[in-house]
Amino acid sequence: MGKRVSRKKVAEVGAVTIPIAQKFAPLLQEHKRIKFYYGGRAGGKSYAFADSLLLLARQKKILIACLREIQDSIKDSVHKLLCDRIAVFGLSDYRIYETRIENKVTGSKFIFKGLRDQDIQKIKSLEGVDIAWIEEAQTITKKSWSILDPTIRKDGSEIWISMNRETEHDPLWQLLAAKPDSRTLVCCCNYYDNPFCPEEIKIQAQKCRDENPDDYAHIWLGAPVSQAASRLIAAKDVKAAFEPKIDASDSPLVIGLDIARFGDDKTSFCFRRGRWCQRFETFSKLDNVEVADKAAFFIRQYQPQRVFMDIGGQGAGVYDILKDRGFGEIIRGVYFGAKAQQYERYVNRRAEMWGRLGEWLKEQPEPQLPFDDELFEELTAVNKKYDHYGRLQLEEKDELKKRLGRSPDKGDALALTFAEPVYDTGRPQLYGNGRVSVEDMFMENAKRRIKEW
Image (cartoon, rainbow, N blue to C red; front, top):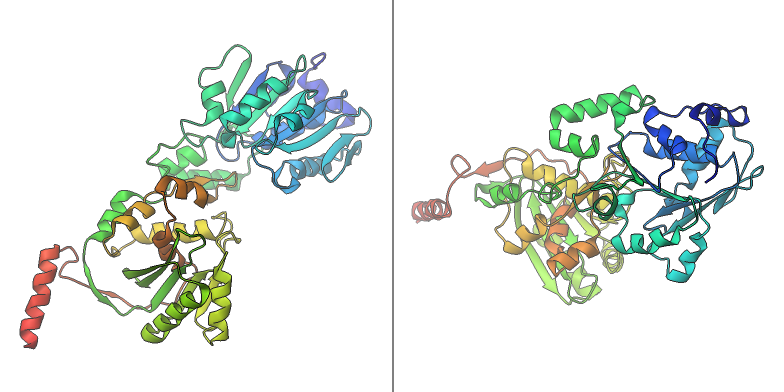
């Protein structure tokens, strides 16, 4: 890595002054094999890493690899962040290419790679790297690290790691930071350590601290979540919703339709009126026309105000059939992976719908679900996390399917009923005080029949 230079001298290279927070000074001043920075939102990790690397690359020729677990395109990398910082500080000695960044004076180069798709031969291109920056390191697998660590082998090379912890079992945390050796620097940086943190961000953090201490600890302080806390929906909320309490509702009917994508998946219809999820209808091995026939029957029979349907995969064909049949005013197509309506809170539509479902279960008056063991398992199995903007993100559906052994068809159908707000002035009609046993419910029905006779 060559001779170390002082923080002050670095800040003056090329007559450009770049402020660096005190907690990040060791990035420039100390030599460590591993520099492991973690913490919560707005701690300034990514900005400080980018600024420090841009400064170092102006001093002498070095090769910097910016790495992630998955990089489907350059947009997934820190390429844009580096470009933005170059523009902010007016670093005219950098030349920006579509897939790399080079310094015209020193010859330093930034390259960008995803680790998951790198085989042994491809990753050998990293052998000459001086500094490897691993961004969002909480996603790095043990397998990826086992390949990368011995590959960054140049004398004096360093590996910089920035991450927001997810769980106690994050692989790199367990391997490197839980019990650091003498060659590893571990540093926690949160928003209050960042002298450049905007006041608005501080207000948001303090509001979260007052309203939800658990979320504050994870999002803003970088604390890992426990296995139970990582679940989107608590078991107690689902159990409470299974208690029979609603006799009827005059809220408009909304139907969620999750269409089977693969052989073992099922097509599920969910019928919900406001606070009352009435029932599910589930079918196996239906083709597009048969699914459209079922949907058309339910629309004519029950006259829902909206039918929200998944139009990924086979769903697009069903949607087209129903639209051709004249149901265009009723049906709405939803892509689970599309941009969320409240994009500042949710990563995509799937997270948004499931997030609204979770809130619905907690609100008053208490909602009601039809008792169903499969539904309980599906609703309480979904794991949550937050991206670096603090937005809700769900685990991949394929991962959930592996754990459940099936697709969460009923859960997705219920979540689809929250795709868009539906005008609702209805109220549920409760049994007594809203908390009765199943026996009481049947007794009430028996009394009504006697009166009718």
